[in-house]
Length: 70
Image (cartoon, rainbow, N blue to C red; front, side, top):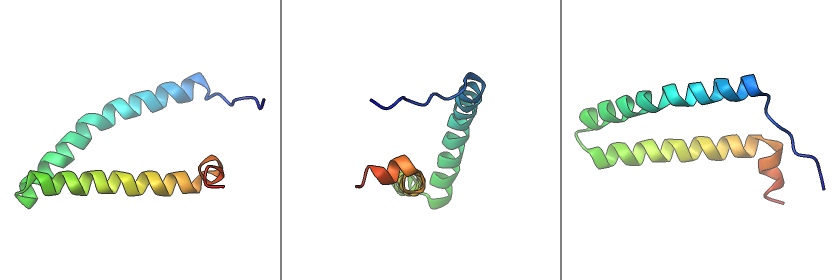
């Protein structure tokens, strides 16, 4: 069995705080996009599509993500 790597506590706390701060910012961005497009569904599609593309790019950029494709 291979040993698992753990994230250091300060780095984990920093990531948790950053994620907590990003949630209301994401809501504000989605609201502004919906108002600008005058269509909430289109704003949701743009938001979710952007997130999906970013997650795919990040996963393919990490060795563990690429190893899952083998």
